[in-house]
Length: 537
Image (cartoon, rainbow, N blue to C red; front, side, top):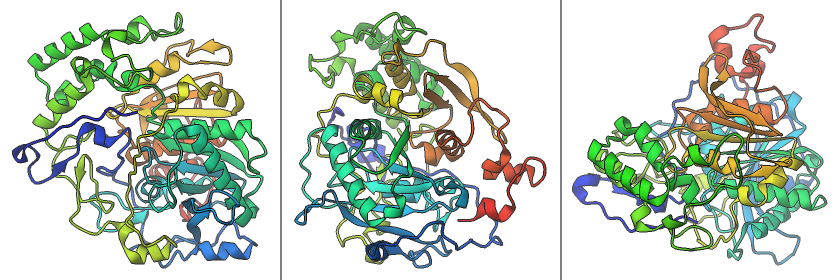
């Protein structure tokens, strides 16, 4: 779905780094400068108990010793990982790689969260290692650290490299749309549950970011429409900075407003902005949200036909209307370290153990998942692991124009998040897509999204939120593209909401749910759990 541009930058501009072109980012080329994570005091020992065990002897073949994960110098407890076929066919060659981590909280054993990165074809092991796993290795960090915002604090979590051809997953990719992807994933889940049968019947939640705006809704829709496909109770979905509409909507229409808002950060001068304004005017982008994405909307939102080449999927943006690309060129000329995932990043480019900090390739040291000792520890094949695999064959209609309404209507809760300083996919585009979507008998949100309405105790105002008809939208003003990495506390809070543990409308939420809030306020009337329960991994 992503428009490829052939861009070459001179060595003087890119200095010693190799800059990737805008469309090589796909909608989600995930690796970038990491968020600084508050570390737990070293004196606190890791609790070694596990909250689940498996009776099938085959499960033991997948067991990962939490004391023997390379470079992790603390015990993260047991987990299970390896390849699982997508069908019961004895000759099945297509297999997905997974890493399952049990929750650390005995009170949360009834829930299972599935996580997928985007891409298309971005490895979910990046999510484990640099976003929401039990331990993380942020860019610029010498070694892994404990993740106090690990999603395993709240639920069992299953990270899966999918579709076939992604990361360590095996087999020949043979699908052309996300209905087929969802069917293959359901086949994987069925096989997974045969080995890990104690997880059958759990409450199930699907989550992901970026191109997972396609994956997650299509998978959820398939499971809702095929309730006997897997023995799980799907309850809701969570997507952040998602690809939910055409590039025209998520990148080009909102590009002018984004550039005007962040002109000082991007280093854009008045001459450039005036030219950008003229292009936006000519192509029908200017004031689009004010005219059409109203609350409530007055009807289906028209797309500016003068901006694209007549392709039915609105992917053929005319060169003279390529506002997003104009901004990218200008920004990276001013700041060679310009990071489309988080626009505030500047020099130096921090080292990344997964090899792609920000917008730059970095191959100066072995990629973590390419090390044979790491592969052996997690039962991965000895192959060249790649974070992103893109075959460019997805013909699916964007989710908010197809399956998302059905998913919202059948889910108990649906969460859509977006970071305000993400330039890969712009938050205004997601709001436009919501206003063009009809669910539960009405189109879009009926009431405006109130500014400064998303608050976390101990952090203050983080952005805006709005809830109508089982859909919750949250915008975090200073988060980039990867919400669990750039604003882990926000992702953690909204996951807690998705799981039914709290309501987002309660701005005085229990500090015991949030490790940092606990550290700020300490034990007492705000805290309900003892320290060791709150910090165990």
